[in-house]
Length: 224
Image (tube, rainbow, N blue to C red):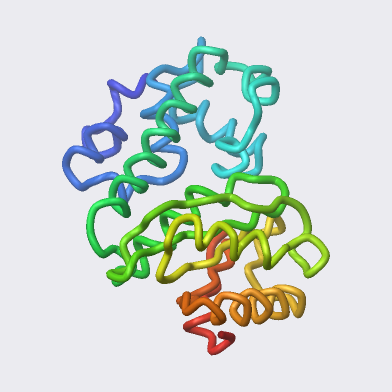
């Protein structure tokens, strides 16, 4: 049965318009993006099949062009549309942080960092430089690879802090495994960087580890 023949309250687009996007399943959201299915398969059924093949919505969104386009029902046009949507979402969050004191909204800050860092398949260490009112001056990805004292250089972090004339900073990095639990190396590096920045009166407000379903805040966990 085609989606147009479904009851109105079961059609993804009608459900979204009536109740909002938050109540839709991953498959229903993906079906709206796909717009159409393939011969003999509705968009919702195709979406469910794709989610099963990739294992999760995140895995589908993280797929490179080759992985994405080799799936039945997908192709370069859909890939470019998806990349554009994801980039617009990132820029929206960046704009939100650029205008106003958004650090007071921890949820918005973590959402911004998650959108910036979660997609990487390797660890990325970033700094969110803030002014005296905790407004964002700049967001920088400084280091890539395993986050430990051998790969994170306090002198480089200090150099960038002074370059931006920052008054405070939020550190962030992702755990590609999806588990945001802080490791001993994470804690050690954070303390080393905090000590270095304290010498020039730059406050470390938090270090946020980005995982899959959850994030870990050093400030909220008492690790700073």
